[in-house]
Image (cartoon, rainbow, N blue to C red; front, top):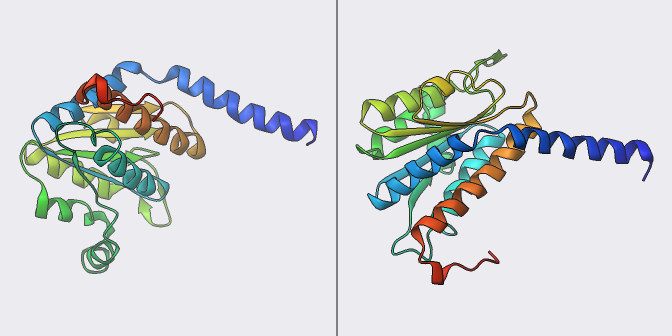
Length: 208
């Protein structure tokens, strides 16, 4: 491998470390505490995102349901709103992509439930498909109107989501690859912190 290639790899990893050092630890604690409280109340957790953030939503729901809570007295009830492809495509086809998450919440969301929005730009900016992530903003508004709690994982300057949710974890980077990669790191960290709070110490396998 050439020195130039090594320099590029080292530069990316150094940037990741710099961004991690600037993430507000208190915001991670706030998001974790909201989810621990949801588990204690046996509330439901709904997660959504677009593009790469959709896969993070699915992964996060998986980890809450299994890894974070499989050794607790009961498991999380977490759902990724991106997973039912026929429903997502039907709602998009008939009612538009801006409504694809809020309309699903109309079916299932109850007072005290939690909605998590994962978005690189936080609902700011636009491209050929018009404004970004308006479906997430509508879902947050719906959850709040029903007496729910809201969390966001965002990047760049946090966008609109940063100012409207109960807990917001911001990855302070103006790079989509850095934000998306570190969002996944953060979901693993949050699950690890939750696990410490809800699983009896004797059941925690440190190797996991």
